[in-house]
Image (cartoon, rainbow, N blue to C red; front, side, top):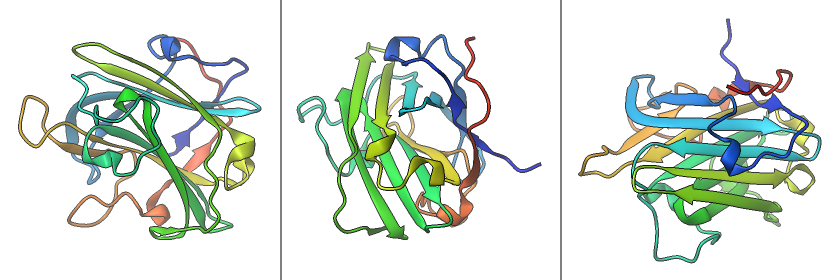
Length: 205
């Protein structure tokens, strides 16, 4: 049976406070399929107008704290970040979303491997964020109508994360729901992304 990426459907508007009470995916495998030690839960859902992409990371935030909250910033993968990739196989275009501590975020669309499309417009989004000494929680709310690719054209996707420090209590790990080939982690492999399933209802836990 083919593994799928579930984007659960809902009628509600989700907030960051809902992450602990809604059905989340445990992102617990490294990019090569090995077991991860990091503890991450990901929420991926949609209603008629928005995508909801959020996560709970159960360790002390490791982020770019020198930047103002809510900044649109590249290279978030240098520290903690969770990532969503959405791919249209028919159009051969994929869009990446990054979400990090301190409400930092980034997105871009690509019409070839790591080749950014021209005239890209940032999607309209809202971010909610909470943290404490031992965890961080973030939610990215994305307006479907502002995406570079019509939302009903997405066919495949992947969830990834770069978590932890090179040295310290939380080891540096690169996680992925799809198993990705190669000797080093490379998340820009849309041909390996998972088929998207948007038909299942989001449930409480």
